[in-house]
Image (cartoon, rainbow, N blue to C red):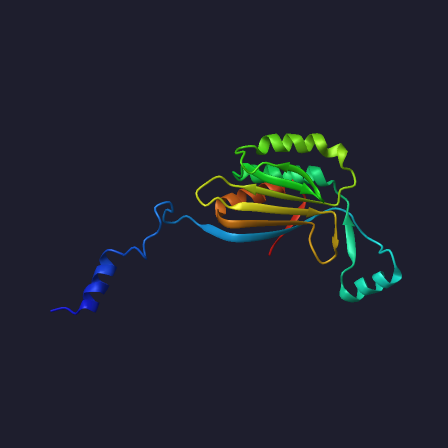
Length: 193
């Protein structure tokens, strides 16, 4: 005679129940990361930004919020980041915003990243004094993670010029492809957040 508890443990050890099994889409041995944040610094010249008043300068120095301006072009950098995301199989650009101006909005268009990169390359001369740009790009796959990128030329000294956040599950191999492309085409220093 066996007790109900011993029968249940024997069944679980020989044929795992639904709680133990992986979903049908995930194979054994595949590694995923979830909700990854990357902070990137470019190897460019940085100059301090002088505040408009002495009081503001004093407050920022006391709070450690001095601002710096990094000398790089915003749209070509955004273009390189879009190319890196495309290399990592991200194909759907949700939106691109520069300040208050929406440069692109197309969440329902799939596989549009090449056209958006071409549009950004054409718009480079039109925005010479831009300070920041925000990108949102989705991977059209099983877990469909979204990459949210913020690029800022002027920012507090303690913060980074580029902030990349992957929302959702992303395969480690795709993250490595993204980082390798950035290391080859941009002079970056990567810090995981």
